[in-house]
Image (cartoon, rainbow over all chains, first blue to last red; front, side, top):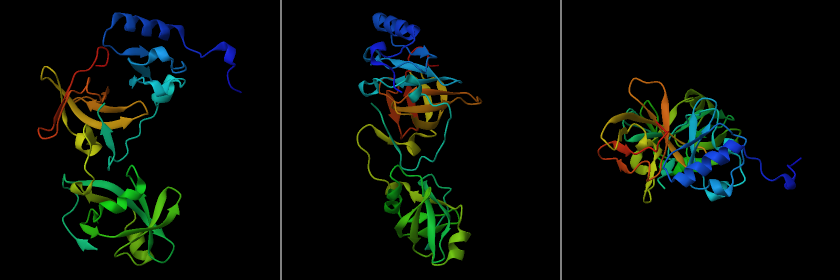
Length: 92
Length: 175
């Protein structure tokens, strides 16, 4: 069963506070969070979050198409080293 | 099938592996490591570790976790089974050209990493993409812990493939 709409998206309060502080400060820093369950809100777009995966903080650059997902979806808890083969990385 | 120097050359990249026979008529199970699995056929000739080259691969179907293919020079189940586990290498120059700001993972892995002050931070161990952009994993010399850096112009302002180094300017809290 999905979450009731009247409740709104769930976000841990400290994530909102930290994001607000960084946005107001205008500093270029990673916002370290442990809350993998928090929903990505429109006001989180822009800064880089360090989302804890149980071992370390994985950098997550939040973009518009990530709104509505949870932070934990972008911070896997298991590392897989495959073959590089013909895979490409694009510098944005 | 032909013989050529082995894969211990930097200009060759592992793009797949032979996973044994499929059926009894010489078809092979082929594991592709490419972003588009079928693209492995475009990178021929493919070379094995013993220096054998296979110039033609024709896909005939799919099996769980593998592609089924006919490989030129492999005509029996015994031949296919004998090659089970062999990695297939493609020449680096067979890979398609890249757009601006695009890099092959294989080109980035192994590059030296320096900060903007010229201090060595380590080498690139791997490149990941968990859905939120590409990340480079940097391992310091003599260290077991790694750091992950977003592969963006802000964090990685310089990628110098000729000098085999990248310069990073990580934001506060990442190192």
